[in-house]
Length: 85
Image 1 (cartoon, rainbow, N blue to C red):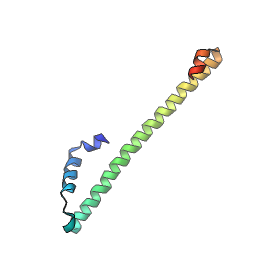
Image 2: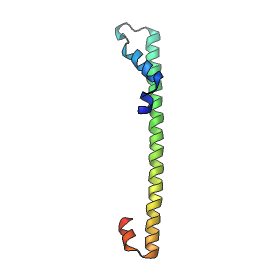
Image 3: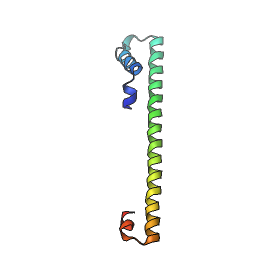
Image 4: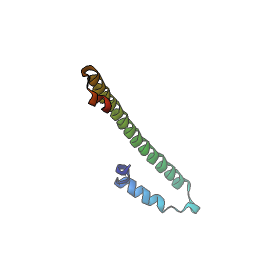
């Protein structure tokens, strides 16, 4: 998420939203705030999906490696690899 926060467009929009006068909001400003919140949410969802996919791949590959070590140690009868796997 640090990648999103460093984008210049996001910084400018954050500053604009912070300076809102919420007591005298016009319809256009309310619509702009809604669009900002919706797009920032979409960016965060995208980043979280990316991280979730990366974690899923890591778990799959780690399972394959540990399973392979277990199969090799079972085939060769190695006690050291059995404890590891």
